[in-house]
Length: 203
Image 1: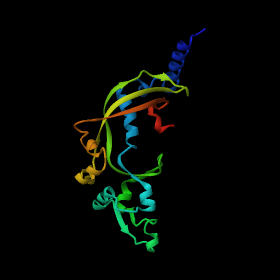
Image 2: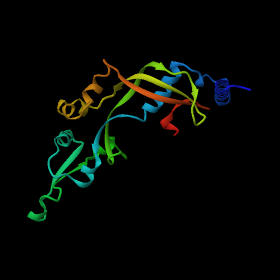
Image 3: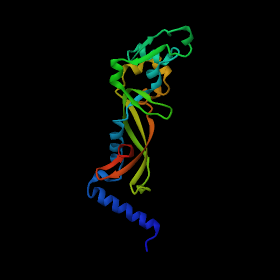
Image 4: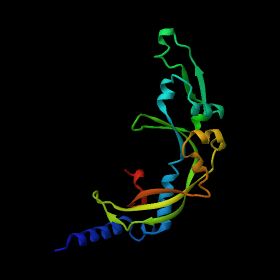
């Protein structure tokens, strides 16, 4: 009888044969891994995150970081007087909304502490695969490899280069310096009949 390790090895081999046959898209290579990660990064833009609640429900006071986005034309601000003095402390008075330019680059996603509105300012490009694990079969029966890689941000929007905005949004200055100092990333890739694919694109 086959031992557990031999069964896993056999399962892995059969998976690789049935999934991609003679195609080189499923080969274990840095080139294939870069292509798979890049396909995911094309959907995962570099963005700033804003609490959606401030846009949906307003704020009780000025938000300095939001005000900087007002200055570059991505948000607009409206001040509303409370209906009465009694309502002053329980009714938001500052309302921020997306401008037409803001809407063009915005996307909304659910977050653990509430929805987040992302304003995207650049594209991510894989630079190098630094290390990867040999393909193994996981608990779902998928053939997977875990990858460490570096990437940079390109096609940066002019508004993101604004020093005041960089000051108020953590990580933005680091992103913009990634052409000289690449950022680090991690990915789990799954072997499919179309080659290697980032797990977030199929799960």
